[in-house]
Image 1 (spheres, rainbow, N blue to C red):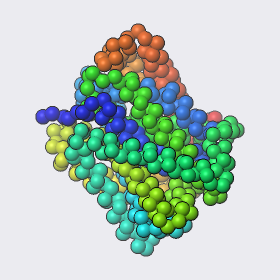
Image 2 (image 1 turned 60 degrees about the horizontal axis):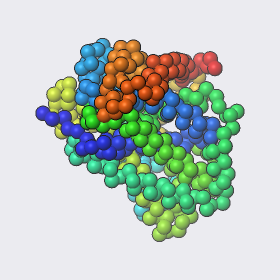
Image 3 (image 1 turned 60 degrees about the vertical axis):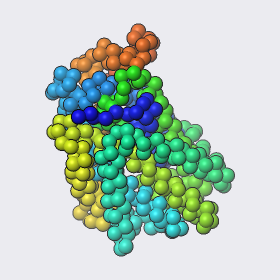
Image 4 (image 1 turned 180 degrees about the horizontal axis):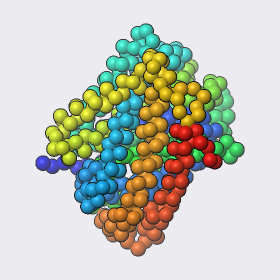
Length: 462
Ligand code: PFF
């Protein structure tokens, strides 16, 4: 049975960029910049994306294309069955991340409906909204279910008909709306204060917490460290140029995160909102801006924005689901449709505690205490800490060690050279080899140990 393929190079780039661009860029990135002190965080994030993540991305795509297998089967197909643990961790990360990502995507979709009906006041009730108070409960739970079902429907349609088609239409629309909102945001009072916060670095703000948040965010944002790009790479043609594809995916992702920041900080400062607001930042700041546009324009632009944010999330949830699904289809020979519905049901159930952890259930809201935090963390934060902050950098580290010392860079170069005849012996090849063999293993293992010690055990060495 054919596994399916992307229809061409652009199709792959759009799907992979669709995976990369999501809530991470528009919801998570701005609030992390806010907490991390602005431009200093931005610089760290950019450095990690280009120096550490780009080589790992090239390795993931190459492993996928070489073997034409899912994240687990790929390591086996290369002859290193023991290393398929990286893929298994990837499948687990996909399941964990999607379980809470779907919840946040449900909030974004719900805000689309609220804006459509002109309920800008919702921004003053964000806590009650995600806490599922009163009538919010039925709505928010319903939106989460709708989101999971939409994701499943796209993934069950397969690669070119489902995943690729969705990304091709939705991505360009997203860029258009963000750019229009930037132009508007710059006309607001205090806009320049926002731009200054975002673009002029204050290095005194950098501490270890900022460094590791930027690192794990770089992996999360580029969909790396969990085999998503091994999986997508497995549907790529041998004629395609992996390097230029990876470069375009990275630039698209970083570019959209960057412009999301340009859009949000003028808004935040013009509304006198604290940039350290945290996960509520876009949900609190933006509706106030839309309200200031007056009923008609506010409803039109506000609903369009949250609709597109939902679509950006959808092209990401699709790739998160594709990782476990392709594993079940390839390795357990299950039919795609059955694999999709079964996996999404399991993921939805695992996500229920996250859904209840924002106030609805005391048990899940004050769930666990670790790492010397001053109060107990909620279930969603725990899943984020394991799935994003631990598994992704670890997955990236192990992928670089595997590529450098087990599979060997000679084989990596051979795969890249297919579709790029000038690669062998080029300067670029030397740079990528050096990054994979030395820079990624050394820097990532050092940072990873420090992350785990500080995040989970409250031991701060630096
Ligand atoms: N990159 C996505 C975002 O920024 O929202 C999240 C994500 C998707 C992470 C797919 C990992 C992944 F495999």
